[in-house]
Length: 375
Image (cartoon, rainbow, N blue to C red):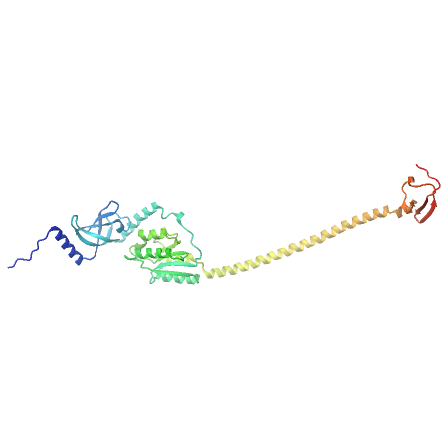
């Protein structure tokens, strides 16, 4: 009977050999379990366990691996590399952490919401007004989804001719948060940014919608320089990304309705406005004509009155002139004395033997002054 092969190794050699075998056999492994013994060291390193009813596995990572705030008892799905550390023993080096189960997903969203609420990320004062209607729209969605099809259909039916720039992303699963965040950043870095950024996804379970409750996507929406409109799931589903957006729509179809007016209603309203404008203009014209006619009558009446007044003044002055006419005075027995064709108003202007003319009402007498007597 032969002895089984036996290899004698130092501790370091054993650790190295075991890690080689682990890397070969488990280049990456995903383990699901309940979170326990979570602690953070030096605000950088993260240590925790995953457990089930029978076993516990230790994990090691950094705070950058965390999907958001976590608490004991949550169900996690952790992707990592098993490794035997030469000083600290066996653990799984974390590569990716995701939430497992609707209860854990919802609880994680609640914890993250409370954290971001304290930071003021959802404050109404941060909200910007969306352009209405925008000429250029940046759209982030899954091209194969009903949400995308509904949005495009309604936009084109309501208000065609808009420019829609589209980035196709996964809206669920492990790659979704990174892809959505990258798409948001891509639109914000473009030399000709759209006027509004729209992120949409149809309904689904809490796990299906989990990407839009991640810290990564929520902060990307909040940081967007472009005003944002987010519509995730059905009306009762409210994601953190929607709370961080400038505007939230209840559904992807509602997002299209919020962005654009219905051109049929616009045409109808324009027709009504045109009719109302024409009616208003006609009324204004009629009123102006009535006022003009009234003013014309008033002016004519005023002119007649003024003419009568002037006529009366003229007659009165004419009568006065007639009464004061020298001819009329002469008819009453008065006379005018002329010397050298000039009227004489005083005896002081006459001398004895001056030749004078006396004008009476019915003729003229030439004579000579014989005597002068002053009164």
